[in-house]
Length: 84
Image 1 (cartoon, rainbow, N blue to C red):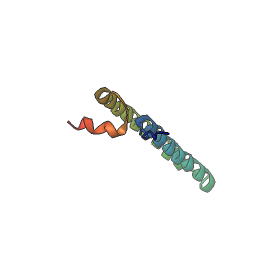
Image 2: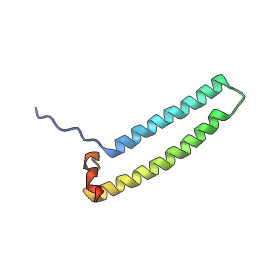
Image 3: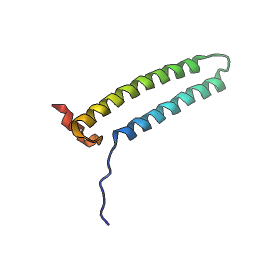
């Protein structure tokens, strides 16, 4: 059995990062509801976090598209080709 190298795919990194940001947003809402039920601060932090995550995802997709144009794959280890 031949060991294949693990490919670090940029899309997977973006998806996992988005999942972590969503978990943080859920924690903001839950702790706000539990600790301060009358205030809306957790909701505002969550809306701000969602806006930041959307902008960050759009930027990451643009970088992935440029990476694919240069190296014809989306393996993160080939990103050094974009230095020139």
